[in-house]
Length: 391
Image (cartoon, rainbow, N blue to C red; front, side, top):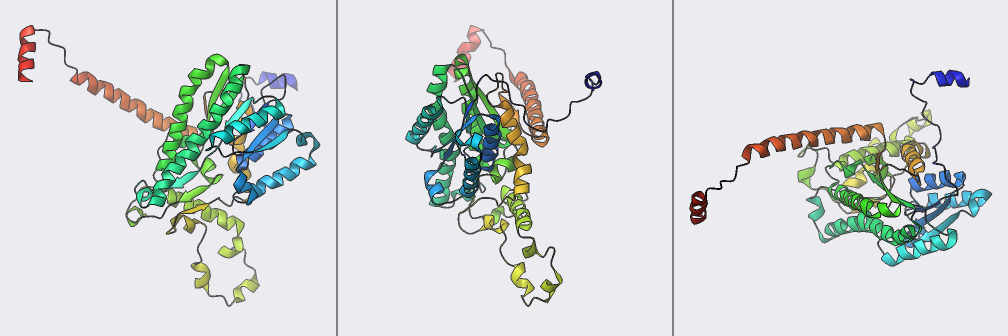
């Protein structure tokens, strides 16, 4: 059987069913900045089962109030308690990345618990949905712009700066920043989200050169746009009439994600949308208009007030949505020679290639135009005097 497989050298190898972890002499210590996200929980389960250690950061106030995605994380903690091999390998720390002191304290707690930090996953992210002009409507919406950069940029910068002295001293470490293809592609209605991702990617690209002499690696992992937006908090600002679909045909993010939220709503509540109704339902005295005009999940993104929510991801949808990203993170994390940038998914790669192709063509055009307007310097002194006097 081995010889038969060996003879098929020209055929493409089958896709692995489980992540291929890089070999290492000792278990690695992972620090995940947003431990409550679906990606973080799935990743933590994978690496804990592999024998690694995990430090998961959670927002203290959100965790205490059971807000956001903390219920899924509490379920994960119950699983950890029941699994003996995981129990002593997980540490939960309070972490608001926007506060420098909390970042330093969280890293110090990780080092005290497990002796070091081998892999830092910066996964703190939040999407603000709205056209640029819609984000300038009020003091509240203007504040959201600042909040976006505090969360998506400075929170990740703060935790990187906190861990760097540890990695540099040990001359070993791997920093992974989870962004998205929106770090390459501008998206209408996600201007602030895209710009914050471009900012953190520019920071990480520059940082990679500075830390390379200390054997500290830097990787950027770019997931599809839907992955990061749907697995983290999204906030929508009130729409302006001028940017409604009837007036502005641009494929605004509000319409895209409203449609996705409605699909998720149908999966979670099929009877509310008239699917799979039993005969008894047909005799209901409820007016059809009452159900027809009942606000859907997608309608929340078009509310007249600033609205924040988490996508109601069913388990089956959540699993398929994040599987490829989790696979990439587990395979890359701690590798001796990790990629500087990894785009997750065929669709993402295709979209970025098209963008880069366009950029390359524009550069070629620029060179031709630039050559056409280059004027040789005239060294004739008389000409120079005339030019100076006319100036």
